[in-house]
Length: 143
Image: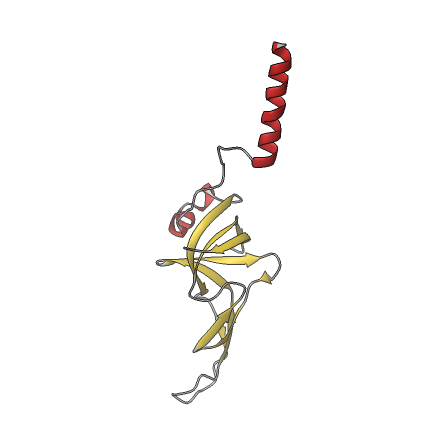
């Protein structure tokens, strides 16, 4: 009878873990962007979580036409980044490829995140051509 109770309890425990997950969560902690960039080897190729504000990357490409002082006539484009004080981390979304910000020098729109809003982003921390970026798995608006 004792073996039957142990077997029954073990089966219930396995079903509970399967249905509800382990109570001791292993989800990654939120990391400051400055820490990722100052110690990239410690986070490289790992899934991380960061909080920040969606902004166009500082490295943008713009046409260089002469514009009258009150008009914005240059076309600009670049990647989307998540910023944290003085640091920025480029974002790449699988479904969009290289995420874009575009518009003119006075007004840039980004997708899929809205420029100037805060987000919590989860993804894999990677590097390409000397630039660190986050390959985004999911995101939510920060509270």
